[in-house]
Length: 140
Image 1 (cartoon, rainbow, N blue to C red):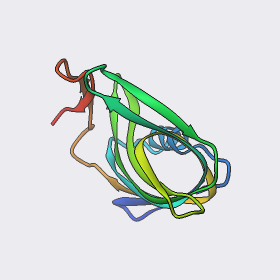
Image 2: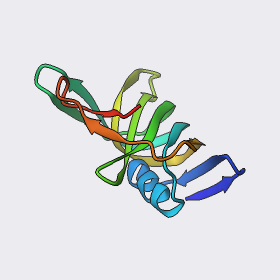
Image 3: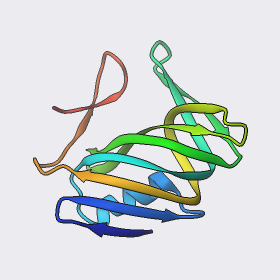
């Protein structure tokens, strides 16, 4: 992982084989990031995507073990139970230009993954369990 900081935002470049979510958690801890908005592009060797079933109150997870273009990543970094919590959604395309998308549980970077992280400066951004949905929602 390489990164540059302009005093307000981060540019992050992940290399082939790195785990996206795990790397962002480590980065948030190392750089003392209290929250932020994430967007990115790049490639993946494999990705675990999820869909949240509101009725079952659980995620359905599928793994795609093939090279994919990361056409879009969007999400945020907040804290839950004192630890960084990465919430990402993504869209991807395969060699046939067929798309898929969902909640990103984890992905292995292909050639690169380029991330823009917009820092949150209003204290720590946190999440708490919501009884109505079973989700950890932002405390705003």
